[in-house]
Amino acid sequence: MNIQPILKVEGLSKAFGGLQAIGDVSFSVWPGEILGVIGPNGSGKTTLVNLITGFIRPDRGSVRFKEREIAGWPPHRIADLGLVRTFQIMRPYYSLEAYRNLIVPLNSPRARRMGLGRWGERETVALDILEEIGFERDSFVPYKKASALPTGYLKRLELARCLALRPEIIIADELFSGLSASEIASLVPLIEKLQMAGMTFIMVEHRLRELFSLAHRVLALDFGTVISQGTSQEVMENPRVREAYLGPGGGD
Ligand code: ADP
Ligand code: MG
Image (cartoon, rainbow, N blue to C red; front, side):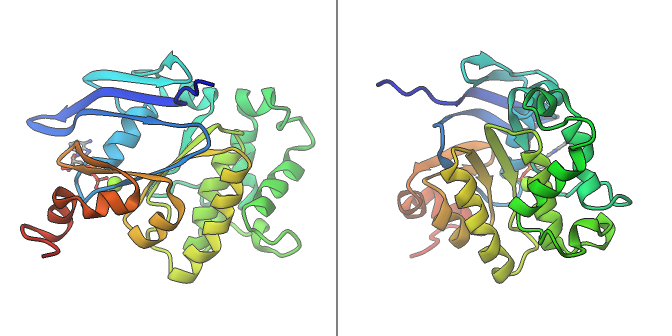
């Protein structure tokens, strides 16, 4: 059987003024895999996420999601197809209770098509999703205002907001940043569970050790270009990656 990539990025480019934030980036993502994306600060990771999910329009290049060209589409249309992202800077509705944060995505056309957003059932569905992602159902946590949630739960809420759209791909932009080792350790099995259930992930991460325990394949960026891709071991053994992370002669 000839398996097609679920996402195929080709020649993607974006400059901000004179700065080539993403230059001629190409890669494929396979259904059900966890692809890690690494790179030093400013290497273009978030810009890449923004380009794929429609938050920034590319100057050039192609983004094909399940054979459909989506480059330049607006974010809501891309999300409606099932390609969603989390934000590095979280953006919950802080004044709303955690579970109510999911009412908006549950009201979206995609959630309704998926049978999730039926009137009168949305609150139950919201609590189900939060439970799936580690909010203890019988506690007060799902009913707390988002502004009162610790970072670990806000990160879960970001994921829950994605799950409310029953996506096919989740692009997570530094999901682990700002979390303690034990908070990350409790998130990892949730991601594994979603992946086992068929979800595809692109995980942009700074936390390499935790990422490498999850990712099947890793792509390394530097100055907006792909400098290496392969297994985590192959990528970390690449001299250009070592130099990008550790400076010239890095790792010697
Ligand atoms: P990363 O997520 O890898 O830290 P970014 O994609 O955020 O990197 O940024 C890549 C480069 O593009 C940086 O030099 C950053 O300053 C620049 N950049 C990002 N967004 C913008 C923007 N909207 N306008 C101008 N420059 C930007
Ligand atoms: Mg970033």
